[in-house]
Length: 291
Image (cartoon, rainbow, N blue to C red):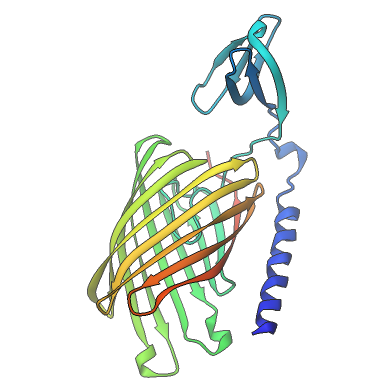
């Protein structure tokens, strides 16, 4: 157990340094916009991109307003902030997806807890296709692989998005009981922008072609700083008549192309009580969106 924990810690440290390396893009690709925090004499605060400034007005672009004019004579202080780059990691929470899918020509690699791997690609701005496999076979576990199509329907651009999708896969083990197919179909609604949103979902789980149990999910994120976001993700479902609820919370440390999640998952089950397990995820975005 100590060796496994040591290897896990070393791996996450390597991932962290990779994130720092890969997040540094060439200067020509960086967003050179200046982001500022403005505090007025009326004790109001504005955070946004500085668009224009003269002797009379300061014009900002904020998350609420495309153009906000602040009279210079009302400003008490102004402080420059770090660049707020585009959040390309918005399509995924810890493991579940949000309504903000990959853009056309954009791809991602996601690794959860070292063993769960998936590559996804944006075939269009609305349709994302993914395929993955589990590396638990390295620890004498079963081999699993799956595919995950997802279609996003924007009801209100960057504010409300409806998602329909599914997963279909196969598990191969050393014993006949370990060989089975699994499937799920689901729908989600995501409310909010790429930097702050919540997602509610519902679906059905199936094994060997038999639809057995409904599953309900919830997730959310908020960008607390230019490179840090808060994450929440949870599920509730029944397994052989026992209700299981999983709730995960943690932080996302993100660069322009690479993000590392660290958190914990609370599992509550009627037969086994509650216990807490650590969780870690790595996300790498590649390719360029096709405009």
